[in-house]
Amino acid sequence: MKVLVHIMLKEGVLDPQGKAVEHALRGLGFAEASSVRLGRLVEMDVAGDTATARERVDSMCRQLLANPVIERYQIEVG
Amino acid sequence: MKVLVHIMLKEGVLDPQGKAVEHALRGLGFAEASSVRLGRLVEMDVAGDTATARERVDSMCRQLLANPVIERYQIEVG
Image (cartoon, rainbow over all chains, first blue to last red; front, side, top):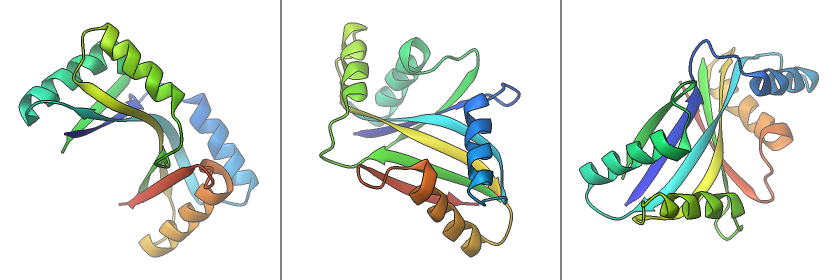
């Protein structure tokens, strides 16, 4: 089944890349954008049932996909 | 209001980064993962009402955040 993982920096962790994008947006005239933060998206097919898939993907996040020290992640199955 | 933009490579566009992650997952014993594709996530606050915000963020995507030639994007407002 299709699994989508959202990975974002935790609140309080500085995001210079997001700041750079915000600055660029302002330069283009998009003054209404603020608190821009960037993250990663991982889409994959995972074999097995929903509960097992979620558990396995959580394991993948902890071991490879995310850095749990500074990032939070959210898993969407199905 | 909070706006979330999902940016992914279009179907058919090769994703070597996704392939590398898939290979690494297999190396860690996660053989059930396949068709891994990576994307970007942009989170921001946008001033104004829902319809205007969506339109403005669409404009930001076309001008800066995404490459519409090879990427598709999806905007979630609120």
